[in-house]
Length: 264
Image (spheres, rainbow, N blue to C red):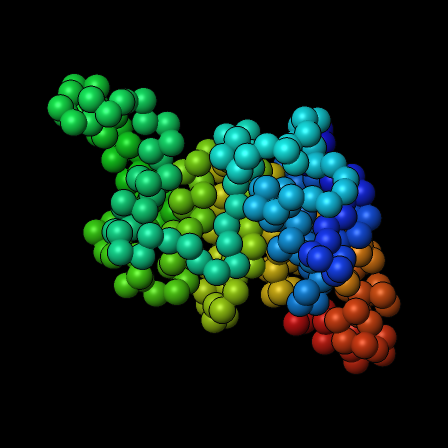
């Protein structure tokens, strides 16, 4: 089943064409990797899918329904949720309150309930607190519930951002460089976490990442962008050997360069 489809997407910023003729599909239960040099247009695709930007031309479909005219909150409610290249937490809130903030989208009480602390309000608050703690337990963050989020180590902040995304109950999760800035141990941990999420939550994922070991460990299919155009698509094994991909990254197709991109 096709979950997400991009049809001949074009995005221009003034006279600059950031994306041109981008078409691909993401099938249900896929983990698709989006790779390419800096400025290739990867994050722009996420911004178009989630309506942070408007597309210039083309069509974006989710489960066959056009979404490129919808508001961001409507797209989230359909089940498309993203993380960001630069971590976006409520830095002065605790770990627990960060996750609860994502869960409040389904809080079914009104202003009067909140003002007078009605039974309905108290029950929903208890349920949200319980659900947030359970999610933190599943993501192995339960011992940090009372810690202010900006006091967490960088790798745990990344983990918390993904946990907040899961609190929105996505069907498709878009991860923008989840391993950015991490040391080798943290990269290994984030790979394990994403594998766990995929297995336990049965999510479809699209991952942008510069760590090739993250992409090759997780993705069954990879799309390569360069200068806003798709230059290759295939399995990790085929992509690593593709001369166009090697040249886009490194400007050479020698065997030495092939080895470098394989282990980058």
